[in-house]
Length: 359
Image 1 (cartoon, rainbow, N blue to C red):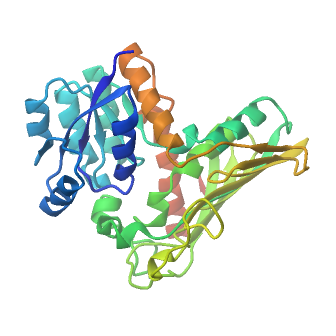
Image 2 (cartoon, one colour):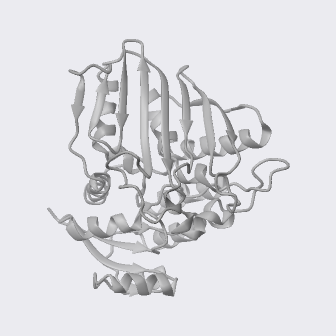
Image 3 (spheres, rainbow, N blue to C red):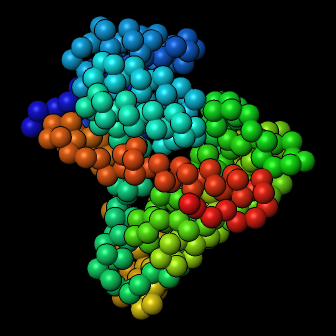
């Protein structure tokens, strides 16, 4: 097994720290270098003692290390376009954070750049590599609950803004300053922009794309934020499956001195829970817990061996496979585009106060 050479561009995304452990411990990966334009963040990274070469620009890093095979884009959403362009110029494969861009013209340009450069662009939707989610997918695909008729999911966390301030700046999280709705002082770019995972899982579970969405944002829990932190989404898929989603920042652990334990036990500071109803049964699961329940019976409980890094191990294993064997990522730009369009339509629904149908 030949390892691939991986670098990280920027260190500002909330998920970047998960890559540190994965890159150090996975024998399929060689961690070559890091680029970071923010001096304070760069100094903090150096203090961690990894001993990885660090550069102030992506271009300098790629010039100094032509052996790099792939780059993890761990920057603010607004910077992804320029970084994709640079990586494609240097013919480097890409793993982009979960929102490549909300600008659909930019998005199409990204797809074109990646295709013309002959590289892959994997999108970081790590729940696909989560053991509980994988078991749920297997049950659905096996027809264990018959035809799926509804999907109810939460993807709720504390606000990341206290630790990653850029996520509270609409120009950086959403790409521009767009009012949330008429007469509202808030802007797009908050909790909805942070939680694409369940919008993607709906498509996989249904085996269908969106027909319409209807979304509304409640008053903010955090009155100092200028972006939305509380919202709900309902709608229908093209095959008729109904769904109800909660992608809010409705955990408030950033306010207390001693946070909850995390994702291991209740109360959790982040949750991905879902209930899937079919014509022949029900599946319930906690993506950050050990159990998947099929029909709720005591003999239908699957205990999953799980650690929080499982998602990143699986995702980086797939990156290795794509680079070494030319495989297509499970989540690439073309697949993910419809998920981002669904999120944009949720913002439109909030602004209009009515359902938004897909073309």
